[in-house]
Length: 279
Image (cartoon, rainbow, N blue to C red; front, side, top):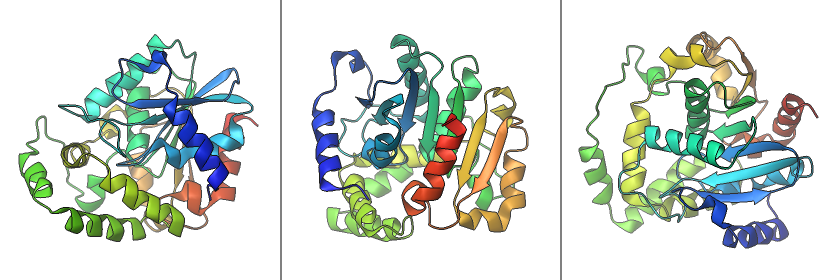
């Protein structure tokens, strides 16, 4: 769990985002001074603070760049947010800041973004860590799912925008309770969700639900560590079918916890991450 001291340090760093981050819609916090850069991408409606415990554990040997995506957890929103747009921004960020062969670590939708970057620019990265994300989440519920070239998210946006704040907060609380066994993190998830831009929330939920990266996995040439929550092991054949074209992947299942395995199964998670990074 993140203690008061660590949270205070994170907030202090959050207040100091140097000018090199200007021009990107996402927020960036830099910690550590190691030669190897690691870029952390949080999941849906989450602050980059979700990675702080991980960053504290590796920052002596790595330079960590922790993102919070636009419109999430109090960060200013974009006019037209999209999964594709965020992927391109991450690529531009890596290039413009001259990050040499960074490791991308992404949770949930952040894991999807990491895979998308690796598929689009296999020359750019050293490796990828995907934390509890699949190439096509919608295919779990619809085996015949096919992504649409253009998806109309208007209805989803209107429906969510129509909710009053109390109803939306209740939804966030119910959702968070099913995502982590950590009660303190659960409270933070509710806070991040309710402080997120409602239009961004709806648009990105719709957009990501239409995302299918299975056809492009074969383009990824760098090593990929996939860390999944224990429940996925019950449908391991379906999960592994989704990753079949990613020849460089290695899948591991957590021993306990829910979606936020980097908090729910901390010892297992950090051992897997450090082993993959070569520590």
